[in-house]
Image 1: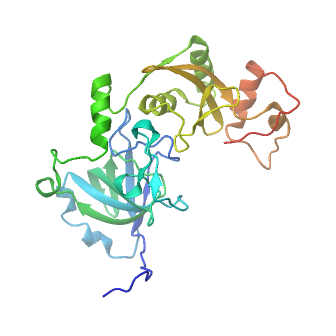
Image 2: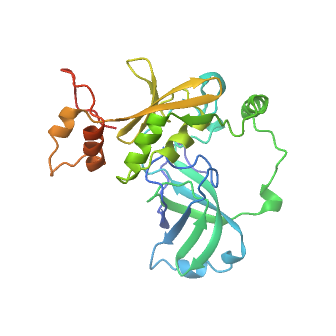
Image 3: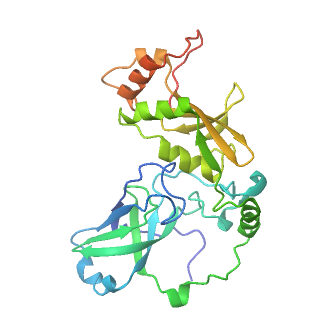
Length: 286
């Protein structure tokens, strides 16, 4: 019998490569979102994993167990994005990545296997996450579409009344915000898609979604070093403007040794839409 609190040793069997560099842009669930992203799982060499993959190619989907390698700490109650009334839920009743043991579970479509590399689709895992195990998905044993979904039943009922799908709000952009987004796109910064994805889920203030009420009273979404100002009227979210997360003073003090995030785009943005200078301007970062 295993003694209580005895450490267990796990060794990653490989690593996954995906387009997702941060939680804000990654889908909440596998295959959920406008972009069905592809990824590759590369198993470690010299571990005899090639024969371990034999016969797996015949399965359409696989369970992937991985490690939330960027997480630090956990709390017994968390605030899920879809929780009605900003009510906290027990972490074991959620899919929160902040867990006592930061182990993730994702159901991915298996596209192909080439050597030690598995090509998968519908990834929601951050790039570079260590892979712990791979198992085939068995629909006859693991698919229960009529199963109860706990507190999410209340959420689903509310969304049905509102005519929403997956908590979707209707996001519209002002002409000014659309012009700003187009300008940034020409400088290699794409904010339209991540903004729409974040706000249509739930635009209420939430630390995980990086939505806050600014000092001036407006709602603000942080996407890396950019800030998106918006307002909410019933089920409609109006994106009003985009702002740089860096002050004029911060950009003036930048140096080649410590480049800022999207530095060139921020400089061009400030030159095109110069903000009012304030004595209290301080360095702001994501």
